[in-house]
Amino acid sequence: MDCNALTDAAIRVRTQDGALRAMSLPGTLTALARNEIASFPALRPHQRHAWHAFLVQLATLALIRAGRDAMPEDEAPWRDLLRALTPDHPDDAPWCLVAPPDRPALLQPPIPGGLKDLKSVVPTPDALDMLVTSKNHDLKSEVMMAAEPDDWLFALVTLQTTEGFLGAGNYGISRMNGGFANRPALSIEPKPGTVSPVRRDVEALVARRRTDAVSSVYAAEGGLGLVWLRPWDGATSLRPDELDPLYIEVCRRVRLVEEGGRIAARAGGSKVPRIVPIPGGVTGDPWAPTVTEKDEVKVLTVDAGGFHYRRMVRLLFQKDGHALPVLARTLSTDAEEGLVILARALTRGQGKTEGLHERRVPVTRTVHGKMRTRVTDDLALAATERVALAGEIQNRVLKPALLALFENGPDQVDYQDKGANARARDLLARFDRAVDATFFDDLWAEFEPDIDPGAVRKEWAHRLVTKVAWPLVAEADAGLSKAVGRRWRALTRAETLFWTGTRNPKTGLFPFFAETKRDDAA
Image 1 (spheres, helix red, strand yellow):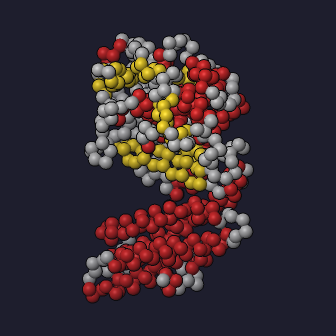
Image 2 (spheres, helix red, strand yellow; image 1 turned 180 degrees about the horizontal axis):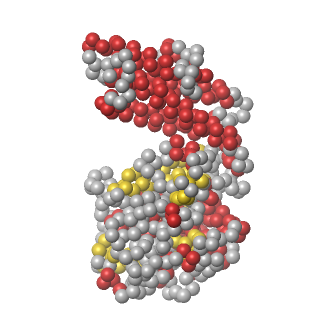
Image 3 (cartoon, rainbow, N blue to C red; image 1 turned 90 degrees about the vertical axis):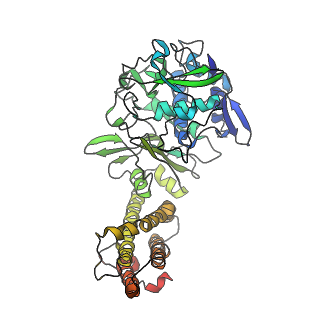
């Protein structure tokens, strides 16, 4: 056996004072309990949530089994707590990266019959990992030839706990809604310097287990937490009622082996998924938001649009059937200032990766107070109204003006003109990105003490029109190749449609722009 995570210092960390050190798994949990770790240098961006969730689930399972409430701040207790999760393996095989194939290894189930069915040879951790790339361009593949043990550990964690369906025999995890979906994460990140995000989440989940009844979907007590402890022949699945609600799953039959003094991997397919699918992927994942559609609850699947401000409004204020996961709610122990709402997802498509999406939304002291007391109706209403206003500016003000330019100033704009719409698309997207960049900072400003909310809202709407939308029209005009005889007509028609749109009594913009003049754009 090789590289025992309980005893070997193989996980590279950068501490809060900037020092680079290597730690064992118990040492890592100890340092996180003390809030001493700033980062994991070998951790790739798309692996961040998988590693965070693994540490939190593992530590929570250990504390619950031991009847403890708080994370210990010494390494020896952590080693004992983790070993208590594998009492049938005094040799620590389940914590080793390399172990005999008929024994469990870290995140690797025992393979009855040995490695003969694992025919795929995987030479590097980045080949084992879950990213699917169509071309070897921006992100190179199979370049980690001098990989360290923690490179393999992070790749294993990401593969086994976040991978989706990838062809026959390659099933994905249970904690998402379908094989081409993803495992999204929405949570609260504490103020830097107060407590580590891992400790915050661990102790919150331990407290919930003390007070909340376990879902009937899972084992009432003593359920399997470390799924890699069970042998897997590829033909049988585990039932949810055999598992602890915070189970750490494995979705692929893979084993690390030592070849020529280096670690490599062997992988093989399976006839069935490791865990019997749960409808909608609703497993109680404490980071996964859900959405109800046609009376069916399912884990949210984040598409290539990522965590756009419209999606974040639906999530944060639980609109249109969306529901927050438990760790995205503020706790009584959270600091009153410095909190961040953190959203993450790696979007996959059929045979491709459609983007790594990560968004951080800082929360002001006032907004935190509303979230803590669950008094957010006024926030939700303001957010909804602002989304509508931004849509009005984009679709009733900016778009008609751009189409008038691109159609050379017709008497009536043709909204179905494919060529004009194609030329306007990028400019409309740029407006949307500008709104997105400061949406929540602008929203929170409306709720600061001793301010006039109406005045703040009006200033925001005028800024979007005069400082964002109108410059896009001017830019389009300056770069446009137009028919000479209609040049000024096109610009005049665009300008007229733009400002008429702001003063349309049928829209929500009218109260803010009824007295606005064109010179306001200067």
